[in-house]
Length: 241
Image (tube, rainbow, N blue to C red):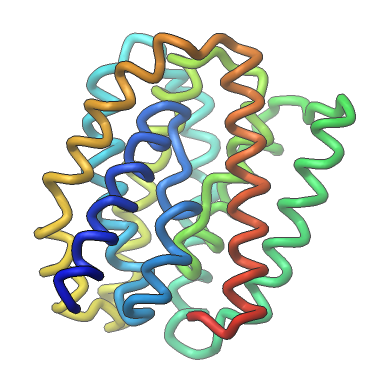
């Protein structure tokens, strides 16, 4: 990695961590396409490790608003989803999966913008958690399903619950990848170098959050979901990853 690539990667991580700290997800959506351009072998490990650190910090800051029950049902789906996602990384290209994910997410965003809000039940949360596990473990982009299900939540509740979900979920994804033997050491080393920039992004998000109400948080969450789907499509069209 050249010094210029390192600097640009650090900037992307800082901005992505700021988004994650503001709405509870989005790190992979912004960072993954650029990381794939620099070095595709860093994915998904680099994003997963940094997301674990960022979500731990956000969870501590917004722990009072955590919906523990909702996070629990989502995690019940995340476990099998992570195993499936890790298996996909080990045995096949993620191109077809990425296309399917992008289409499903965009459809969910479109119907949400038209006024549809899924009922927040045990079933919908578990199903969203499973989809998030498959997406997050195999492509680094796993926030959209949870954002669509929890889109009506206020900022602190969304951040706290999403952070609890992703902290445990990312840990499960990393363990699954380790068990499948697809965690390159250079990805862990790069993650260590990027930690200060990820933390700086969380600090920056504390200032951004002052301007977010429920409507703006929902719009930002759905917008980030759409951005993640579009970036996945672009990455596949130009042959990244």
